[in-house]
Length: 288
Image 1 (cartoon, rainbow, N blue to C red):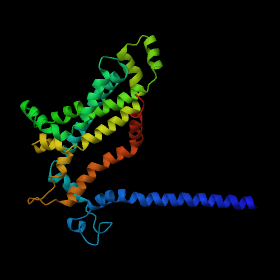
Image 2 (cartoon, rainbow, N blue to C red; image 1 turned 135 degrees about the horizontal axis):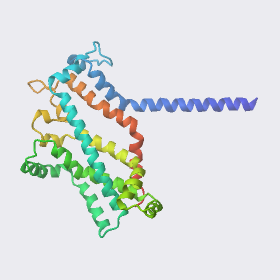
Image 3 (cartoon, rainbow, N blue to C red; image 1 turned 90 degrees about the horizontal axis):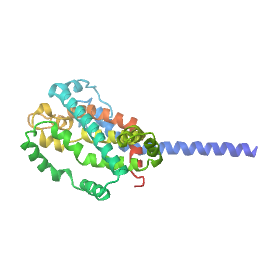
Image 4 (tube, helix red, strand yellow; image 1 turned 90 degrees about the vertical axis):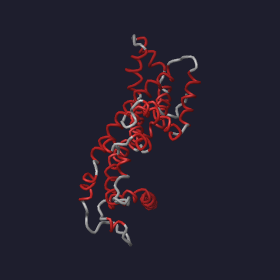
């Protein structure tokens, strides 16, 4: 009898502990969830209700036409497409450069490899704001200032690729040499080992790097602001700041609707692939 009472009390305490932990997690998540909730609900309100006091958690009248007006006010769909294809090209290019250079630093011995790798990493310390003027004049001299070329090529050859090289190098260092030795015995050359052995094993690191690179390119604001003049070439960050009236006052209902459209796909990608993002950072801490 005493054993049953003890078991029931133990089960109750475990249940109570789990319930309290769940309640604590829910309360702790409110500061993170509420801004997204306010953004989505605000996008369905009229401008007056957005700043009403006391604020309302739900719209009194659901203004679904705000999302239609977003595309009528300016070429938002074109801006959306620009951001998507630029981010895709930057991601593909960064994966190509980072995987090749990371493998070279990890597996191919050559004179000055360590020194060159340290110099490469030191370039991350230089902020993008320091180089933006130099890059602008260089692109202007080449006649590429009002194009998407700088937004694609500069990140592929800049800091994002350096970070990607570091991540991929750390992952390739962790691969046992016996795997490459077996491929060499089978007659594979260096590129064959990279393509058929090392690269398939590095899928988790490539996935995490792809997501981080895509997010970074999607959120770029300074570079498009400096390099782009034509409205048809704008990306999402530039488009969001343009939802204003003729006097420069923000149209908050349209800005919130446009921001919701821009955030939701990225939020979904992050939620689905967050494990790969965590794994990619974990592999960057491997010895080497």
